[in-house]
Length: 167
Image 1: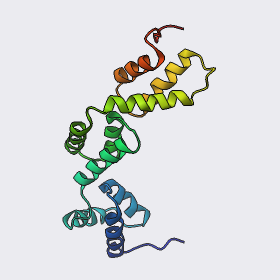
Image 2: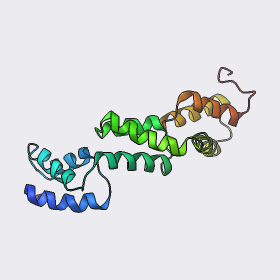
Image 3: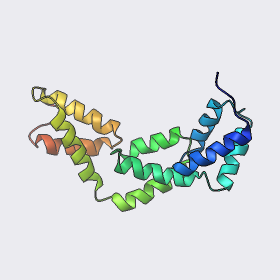
Image 4: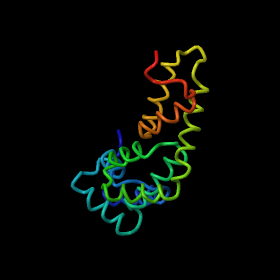
């Protein structure tokens, strides 16, 4: 049987947990729940972690946006959705995305092109062009890139003679 922690023991463990990497307040709520800490205790523990600098939704949002864009190849649509899932306020999401967009605006299309080109190479050669189009489109959309940008890059990759409406 799992041993339940006291709020003080949970706080002590969370200081180490938060010192290792950035976490959202929602991550901390889930962790506290899994440790059997009553939900009415969670806000006080979270506020204390924020006050002492172990937890910061702003830092989390910036780190999340930067890491998911650079290392996971996610687009801004997916990043925004995932941050909302972490219950990060919209103004912090906008601020973090704007910071990255200023840095990486030139490389976004190149990144999408490389991502879709890699996916195209992994698809079976015998696949119909229509299926190729659909898979690339789904892949780009899942990664969080705008439909129009994905469509443009697919047209470049498959050749300008190919139109999505063709069989």
